[in-house]
Image 1 (cartoon, rainbow, N blue to C red):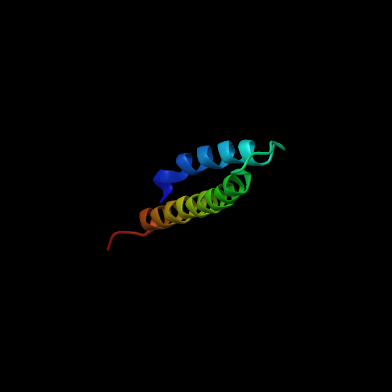
Image 2 (cartoon, one colour):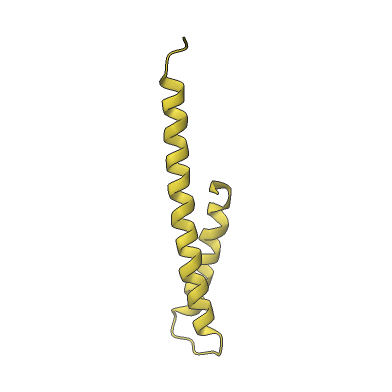
Length: 65
């Protein structure tokens, strides 16, 4: 999931610029929903990266028996 962090960031920023700048067009609501879901995906991806990196650090600290 952390491999997609940059992709979610790009989609979130582009859809936020299109959906929340005040432009009125027929697909504005759909773009806002895409921004919402991409933002949620971005948050999950960032949390996944933090959790995985912590697990890897803990695994390195354990002494070899």
